[in-house]
Image (cartoon, rainbow over all chains, first blue to last red; front, side, top):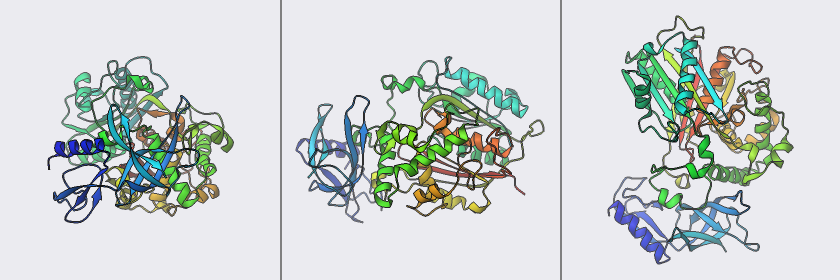
Length: 120
Length: 380
């Protein structure tokens, strides 16, 4: 697969509410940030897959913006084992914290769909 | 071979960045007893938007040479953020020993105060190949990334806000007697904890303030007119973990683990430490990663040691960039200048007694992906 093709497929999957990830067919390493080479074993035999969208919060912070808004941002570890940065949506009853379970949702940013995560 | 140095920092410098750069070079050359005609090598790392009213030099060492009328034999670009200044010293020593040049200017900084208003930030440069998948989110890099590390460090090890605040308090104590610091009023832990939370758990007083400023260091064979001590590089190591930290084994480690191992220097022999201080947590991560204290135990360590310039383990003896401000979003020049002031007994009001060996460590980029360890002292 070519880089631009891979990136385009990511955005097409976002539009279908699917969370993509890549799996190296040689060493089995799973990763999110799209590239045409496995960052571990350097194989270019890579398969594009769809994640269950279920995971846990690995790291997080709440950003207190000057306008008073509070934004939750973090690193989510998906059940397939890969990690990604994302915004996290929490509410009074479902507060975010490290190790809390989350589920992917798709939000609109600059008129495009992107994955974010909701505390479940 | 470091024969001269200078650092000039302003909250908001009124003239152009090139004016400030020239003033800083003039001051460093003056200390070295050298002139522009002696310069035959140049290394530079410049913040975006620094020159001619928010322009960025694509190839800064080259364009600075063009502006100043220098024809270098040796030119290089080391542009991985804050710790680049430490790397420049190492590369300059190597180049001079290899007879590639005799007098090398090492420059870091910029004029960026106009970028504190984010509407002035314009750039088609990307920070990672995955900006489209990282920077689209609502975040506040680099603060939010370091805040996540602080949050996770607390969750895993019980590190407290008070313990992090102690770093800010001890550094401020050091800054109180540093004429280069812009923040010099005494503070206590309560002041840090009652300052605004910017990104949980980090408070405003745990975060550097971006300022205009340049640092210039001159490495030269021509030592006869310099009054500085003959300083050598006692140890050096660098390490780069370029992947997004989400893909690292854990974000509580930094590449300092590897850079310090490469430098492999006995910490018992160190008189003071100058550790990159973009945030309180940054200092604490490096204390662990250089092996001063075991991973996870830095909180208690901070409580039970005196880290001031008068203390048993002096760290950031001039108050660090938390108190001088961070020139062009890079603290490397600040910690390097302070190391040289200490080694030359020039740290008026905050001098560590018998400072003969200084251990420096820098971290670069919002993701902490670049680490440089540098130990300076006289080779016996």
